[in-house]
Length: 162
Ligand SMILES: [Fe+2]
Ligand SMILES: [Fe+2]
Image (cartoon, rainbow, N blue to C red):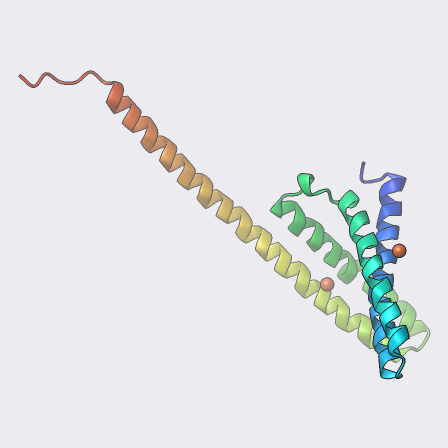
C-alpha cells in the first residue's frame, strides 16, 4: 500500500474514528457513572472495548509488524508530533483566536508545546538508537576480526619445534 493510496488514507480516517469512539465512550461511561447510571456506564465501557479492537485492526494494516523497525516506529511518531506542533495546532489556534475562544486557544497552544516535547523525545531516542547500532556494529566487527585472526593462526603452518 503506497503512502498516497486512497485506502491508506481511509484506514487512517477509520483508525482515527474508532480510536476516538474508544476514548469518547470511556469518557461517557465515566460521566454516566457519576450521574448514577451504572448500567449505561457499563454499556459504554463494553462498547469502548470493541472500538479499541476495531482501531487496532486498522493500525495493523497501516503499520504491519513485519515491516516495522525501531527506527521506523520512532520516525513515524516524531513526524506525527511535528505535524501537530508545526501545522495542526498553529492553524487551530489561529481559528480559535478568530472566534474568540480563549479556552481553546490556550489548550491548542499548550498541546502544541507538548507535541514538540514528544517529537524531541522521539528524535533523541532515534539518535541514541542509531549510535547504539553503530557501537553494536563496531563490536560485531571486532569479533569478526578476532575470529579471522584465530582462523589465520590455525591454518598457518606450525613452526618446527625440534
Ligand atoms: Fe467501531
Ligand atoms: Fe503528543
